[in-house]
Amino acid sequence: MHNFSVIIPCYRDEENLIQLLEQLQSLPSKPYEVIVVDGAVSEHCRLICNQYQVRWLASEPCRGQQLLSGATCAQGDVLWFIHADTRLSPNSYTAMRRAIEHGAIGGYFRFCFDAPRAWPAVILEPAIAVRCRIGVPYGDQGIFVLCETYRQVDGHAPWPLFEEVRLVRKIRQLGRFTALSEPIFVNPRRWQQDGWWRRTWHNRKLALNFARGITPKELAERYR
Image 1 (cartoon, rainbow, N blue to C red):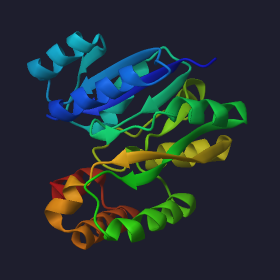
Image 2 (image 1 turned 135 degrees about the horizontal axis):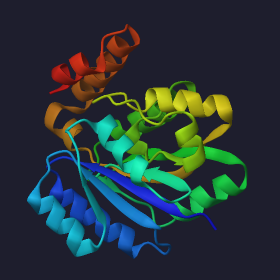
Image 3 (image 1 turned 90 degrees about the horizontal axis):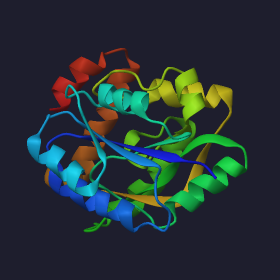
Image 4 (image 1 turned 180 degrees about the vertical axis):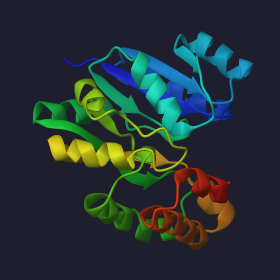
């Protein structure tokens, strides 16, 4: 039986963090440990972590560095990286364990928009699935990886955006990085605020500019 270390980067998102920690407690299987890496170094976040008896780490506000810091402290043999505003499937651990038992060294969940949904979600979800298979799934899809493999490929890049790109590419060179059919539910708030197609085009522009060689730091400033 594999021991899972859950690593959650957080930045001024305590309300969603509470909901995620409650979900983790209610799953049929329990993680070996939960590590929250707080980029805001918030006393409120620290108190929440104490309440739920999970580990709190202070970090600079850079998602790649937050994930690296959490992974460095993790003691489980599987690392599971989850964004704070995510909703989980009750079968998440079963799906990951089954994939690992069948030879995967890592993988990611199927991207689904959480409620409230709008009709563009029906088009965007299968398009994202295709993009993940020919490109790279992003961190909001609950990437998991064997700890030994993660350390072998030097983990996430210490970047504020696209921190998982190098990681996923290196994992795929070593073994099977599988796409789970089990969903993970992504908060649609940015799509709702910006407009579904405008947000999608904005994300694609960021990815294209990253591919052109623009640094993640510069892209993060544009993203903000």
